[in-house]
Length: 292
Length: 122
Image (cartoon, rainbow over all chains, first blue to last red; front, top):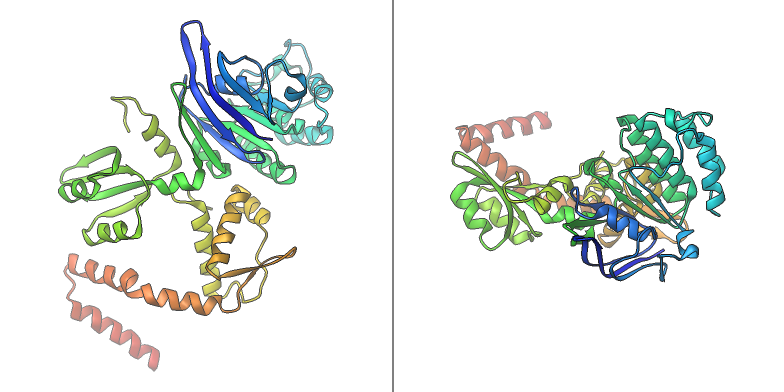
């Protein structure tokens, strides 16, 4: 199911959380939504789930505005970092019952399997769950809802590494069996990045980029060599960051280098290295004075 | 596994080419499906599909509608020819550069190669 945002602004009092966001996400893909703390990720996801009304602009899912639209929101599931769990005394199995009543696409057997894999007992009350197990319950609800649009906002919080790997593997396996639109907002970029087909980066309420994940990987290049040669080579290119160690300089450039340029680099004795998605993200969103 | 540093589809395509070159994947042999690749390497299936598409465009794989992807019968030969072309610039030239940098006379390198070649002939 397609997600379309057009000129979306969201203001809380004097704070502008989203500032003119226009974005078109075709359905049936896994998206990575990346942004620093306070960049507007959670605001964006709240708009997509219909939890909030945009101050200006339109938010459409499957072609329909989502705010106060029960038909549209029935097909959208947002699992928030805070989890919208009811009272502490509510039992895990009751949380699943609520989800089942809410979602026509609910798969109870799958939910049961996931709870077992995450080792969460259905009879436990929500208040007695550790942070990691609470996240596992959220992930279970999100995946077993099988909604055409599923949004995970930092949903692995407190999960240990094996549980996070399980989450990643389940997202992928279930997506392949039941293709749908999945948005993963995450700070642990390296761990889930191979799952992304496309990446959306926002910063201070604005869109930084929306790209195919592999195209983005091809964009970042680290050029290392004698300082003068490096400087000459990167002249005219977009420089994201640089470091110097004695006579050697390493510069991160943004933009794909064609074969001629790569050959030229080799001939000048410069080393070209790839940059991880997470490092590119850091370079693209670092503030002045922070390491880039 | 794949690293997250260069385009994953290129890493997959390179790996399949290496398997074809080594003969692990034979001509007309079926390769795993995009979903099998995706599950095994824990990557997005669209990324695996992109690697396959690149290999189809390069003539390494061919598609049989409704069945899957197969290795082109001539793939190994053409990959070998391709690698032969880049052998000197990719392997020999850097070796010579390295030898110079660490002070190994080129005659020593040639001697070593000659000895290895003679060993083969014996």
